[in-house]
Length: 169
Ligand SMILES: [Cu+2]
Image 1 (cartoon, protein in one colour):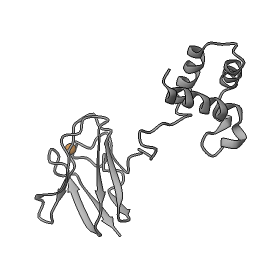
Image 2 (image 1 turned 30 degrees about the vertical axis):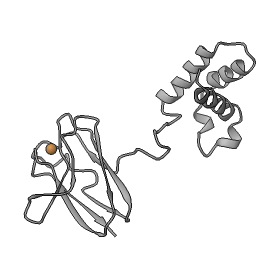
Image 3 (image 1 turned 60 degrees about the horizontal axis):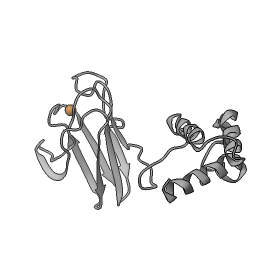
C-alpha cells in the first residue's frame, strides 16, 4: 500500500478506537460495534488488511466518514432539484435567492433528471459572461467564486423561465 493509504488507515483506526478524542470529526455513536471490533482485531493482527479496509469502505458508503478532495466541504450551495425543467409551481432553485460574502465559492448541483445550464444574466434576460456553465447532467456541479459585491442573476438557457439570484454583501 502507498504510504498515504497506510497513514489514512492508521488515522481511521485511531479515530474509531479512541472516539473521545475525535468526536468533533466523527460521530462515534454512529460507528457500529462490529466496526469497532474490526479495528481492534486489525490492530491485534487477528484479521487481514482487506477485511479492515472493507469496514472502512462501509463507513464511507454510509457517510459516517465523509471525504472531500481538497479538505473543504463540497456540499452544494444551490440545488437544481427534480422538476426544475418543468413550468410548474415546484422545482425552484433551492434556494432561489442566496446571500453570500465576498470570496465565496458557490456550488450548483444538478439533481434533476434533465440537463441544465447556469448562465449569468443581465436585467433584460441576456446571457452575460460572468459565470457560465456547460450543460450539467444529473449529479454534475458547477462553481463560481464571487469576488465583487453586487446582485447577480442567473438562469438556465434550456429552461429560461428558471431564474435565481445571488447577492454578494
Ligand atoms: Cu434547465
